[in-house]
Amino acid sequence: MQFLENLSDRQAAQAVQGRIDWKYALSLELTDPGFDFSVLSEFRDRLIAGGVEQQILDKMLLKFQERKLLSARGKQRTDSTHILAVIRDLTRLEHLGETLRYALNAVAEVAPIWLKSVDRKLLRLPLALRRAQSLKNSSV
View 1: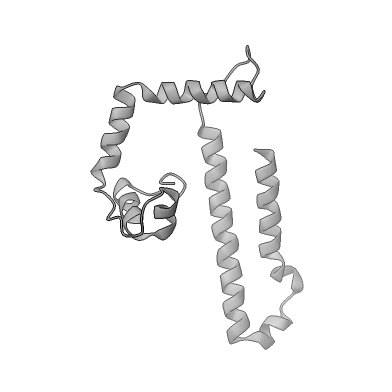
View 2: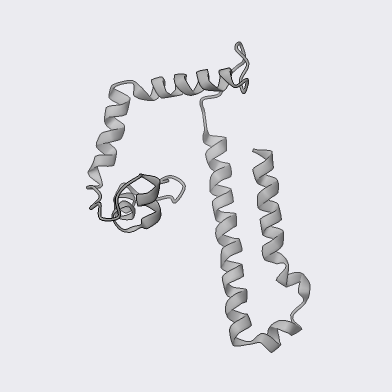
């Protein structure tokens, strides 16, 4: 979640303290006070020091093989850079689409007559962005 929203450790800790969606995703009570941002760095250090990241990767690969998502002797990629880049692009595309939708809704409230005079192709732009997003999703 921290990576998807491009947040620093401090910003992620603040999100846990004040955002209901983060509390829900982390199975926290609404009254949970959160934690200090330094906990995230310490947690990552403990994972690496204990070699837990490799254990997690091994378990994931085993589950993928069991579900026939990977071949037993195939080459496995552990570099997720390409996946993270696609996620970041999708997030930006979603933000752009939402911004356009919000702007068009605001214009519809303030100047509905002017908006009716605008070329319909322009108004379909948010829909075109959603279609582009679903095409990108299917290519991942």
